[in-house]
Structures are given as structure tokens and as C-alpha cells.
Length: 94
Image 1: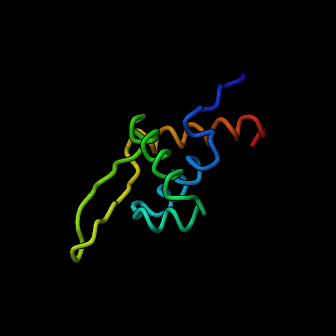
Image 2: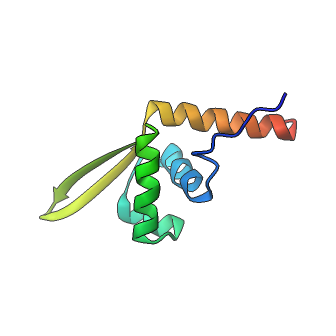
């Protein structure tokens, strides 16, 4: 049966962000920017969309007097990612 893919996760950059967070648990803004090759503006927009969907948690703080943005996957985000992967598996028949 055809299952619609989650439009939030179907974006390449958002899928990359969530995939990295599933693997690592929590990463900071700079690391995610570096690993995805995204610009600061683009990754910020994608963070906002993922946060509004409840898929990630963003925590802003200061470390050694410098701003620090930590990003982690939420329970809802992990569930959505697992469902997305399962839908792809269904399409592939694996």
C-alpha cells in the first residue's frame, strides 16, 4: 500500500539534519552546518521548520562567552524518521 512520505523530512537538507541527529543525538549549529554544507541562512530556516513540526529541540546558551546553539532530535522527530525510513523500505520491498 502506498504511504505518503513525510513532507517535512522529504526535503534533502532537513532529512540530512535529522539523520545526523538520529546518529549523533545532539550536535551544535556549526557542526551541522559543516556536515551538511548548508549556508547559515538556509540551515536556520530548516531548523525553524523542524522545530515548528516538533522534530528537533533547539537550546541556545553561551559557552566561554560565545553563543552556542545545541540541536537534538525529539521523540516525535525520532518516530517520524523511523516511519519515513519504514515507508522507503516498503517502496523498495526490503
